[in-house]
Image 1 (cartoon, rainbow, N blue to C red):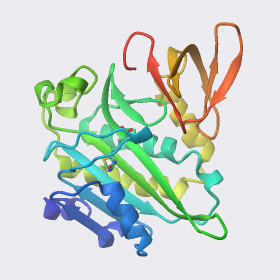
Image 2: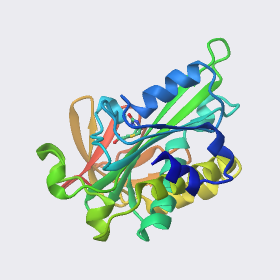
Image 3: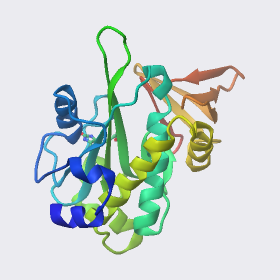
Length: 265
Ligand code: BTN
């Protein structure tokens, strides 16, 4: 597997710091451990299996052996955390590009970090930052992505079966996970090169790909559920919603998630 990935990435600048694991707790957790020990910008971790795959808001990410691509990259941008508010959005657009290259089908993005096909989740993105103690500047950013590749509906646990899909299910044929991983790494490398100078272009692409926009959704926050309409996404990736009484709010992804009115998306 690792050899195949190395072959697909021949000559790529991030190939030199590529780490492949047959099994690991979580590529994001391992990336954070490595970042704390000084791993350089562009360190990439790819796993065939995760025993403790993590999602946003403390959720778990089902990561069975050989069924998906579980990948994290360590970036070391020289900036304050506030300048990276759009990082998850940028990664999401990059992952739509990578899936489109590999499977000839472009997923949508469910705000803020889910890749979806139709009404089902194909994968997700978990971005985590480490800060320099004194200055508060970014020490590292870890972007972790999980994409379901080979599963059939019965392979998903019952609790997510209705809302999960895979590239195999969506395309009707298996997608080579290592080729997809290579496209993901290339797309993340391009994203990194333009993360500041192409911010407007990236956010326009995000809005075009975002299936949440214009929808009636339920806002889930601190145990409350509030119906509203998703109107726009600002340049930092926050969701602008309007409630039935006309009241508008800009909600940050920190502690909020959305569900469709009639289903997951
Ligand atoms: C989500 O669904 O909220 C995000 C899921 C992110 C999963 C990926 S798999 C690779 C990396 N390692 C993890 O533990 N999580 C991310």
